[in-house]
Length: 390
Image (cartoon, rainbow, N blue to C red; front, side):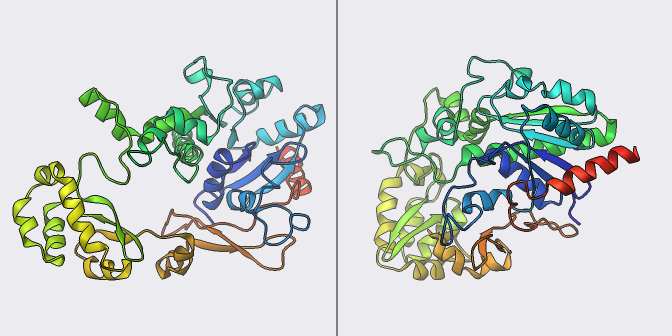
């Protein structure tokens, strides 16, 4: 039993942001019913596949963020399906959707309508630019994706090498961070409902979330009047805090504190650097000289050699790829690689586990992602039984 095992969540989301949010709730035990439009979530056919896109029910994209959910296919434009959805809303705790602003209203299924059927309902939306209910702007109604959010929110401007172009962060943080914040909002709203009985609307925008994520750039601009830009893997106010080339790859070293800096200099057999640059200010203003000195030491050593010399005394780590992650015993001990069935394939696949650890109700992926409309009979049957018992 998960911490949220008493909750019923109706998930009208697709692609990444919304499904990731409801995945977090499912991992914590919520009964998440994925309400899919005719034909299902757009990302069901997205690769990769184990072997065959024709034989397998869905690809890795869908599997990863829809594990542990139940699926019900509904056409909200059809009266019968709309009524079925409303019957589910009456017994639900949370509804989550990530349509453009105004879409649910076109079906007469906006927050106000659903709240009439269930005043205690938590209704949550994830949109590129938020909902007019919480602050109306000219951008609402425009489509948005991770790339757009990272561009507008300043993430791309401060990511990449100094002499290179603005660069998108690899993972879809515009989706994932927004989804995580939305999950926090839902849980806060549920806590408020437990105290007051009052439902409410929760709105999280991708653009807003990226501004929150780039908090350092925001306060830098306010304090200095200058717009921060790219500076590779280094930090604007700390040194050393950077990636350094090794003989067989790269390592990161974060030795900006004097205790770590002295330990680094001792390991490199450079007591002169510790004496000449004893404080953070002197190290920051002479970062290029010091970067060259550290590189001279790291380039002659392997990543393992550098980490063995520094670990336990200086924050250090190799820059890993996913093969390294799969080989790391720490990752397995933390249950961060979880096997699930892949329908249509002859072997299981592994997906990222839950980073939220709890002693009594540990979150975990609760089985594979659903087949389209796999749970129609049981979901609608449960709704009928609940209505009859009421």
